[in-house]
Picture 1 (cartoon, rainbow, N blue to C red):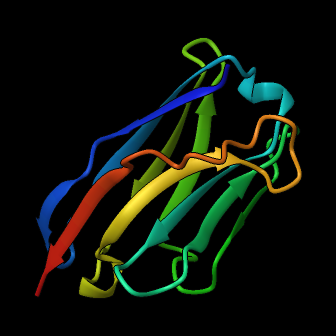
Picture 2 (picture 1 turned 120 degrees about the vertical axis):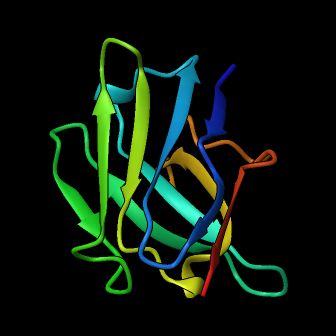
Length: 118
């Protein structure tokens, strides 16, 4: 059974940084494409960043140059380094396996809240 536990969220002023972590069990991250997503109440969940099994990364235009996704294969953890944060980055952040993956979880869990104040 796949378990993904997000942490690292919090409150930060605009321009600040946070690093989110997603600790995984039941899935080998280095063999799968993983993504970070975010959702604001009343809006659709948005894909923020992905990292493939080969380490290729991709980002939403809104976060390019500010966010970096990475994995630690020893810790089986995926990270999202967020710099130059903006108020519009405020959301609940989730990690999940790529859409269509056998390991993609249907229950997105609680995620981790990021709040950026202006």
